[in-house]
Length: 275
Image (cartoon, rainbow, N blue to C red; front, side, top):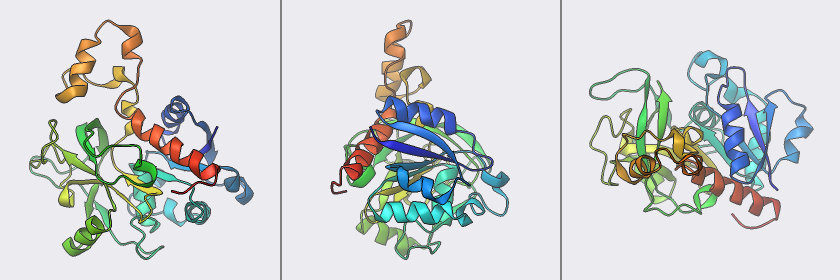
């Protein structure tokens, strides 16, 4: 069973539910503080940086946590094929550390800027729909025609950079997720794209797909009972059909598939398999 480190920084607040989701996906999670001894990190098969507000989002979200030595250990693990998943604040940390998109490792190449969309400018907490956009690495088990609803909860989640850089990232297969409409069609601005991200990007990855940074929270959609019964699309219909049926409600939600794919990648890495 793959050992997964849930990296807890001061201000992380989603580590417990992330650990439960990893366990449900077949992994063996352990919540590990950012200042654990250096030799600890080499014992894990994968790493998750959970959501929260590391260092109160001082300076910029994720900017201070990104400077810790643990990110050097995580970068070395990724180079060895061990997967790294950053969720919301964890995504911000990976971007600030230069691990995503990682064209020039260690260099901050994209920004997760303040939300700026028609009808909203500030923190947003809502449900969105995602489409996986690359079939490699951590996302290898997710078909690109699968629509995954899950919550967002952030104030600085707008992926942005020079448009030509995003075109290059698309060419390289480094766009991990896009915001879409409930039926899978193109997002038509707010609220389908909740923050104004360039090209409707909800997540990016490095060139290998081993390191993924995404703004939505799959741990908040890991079980069917977490899905709102008023949600549109197929998952909303499943939730309504399961009303009153406790075993079905306790079944997998749309977010669990991401953790299952992540755990599968960590198992391949532990076995010495290819990405």
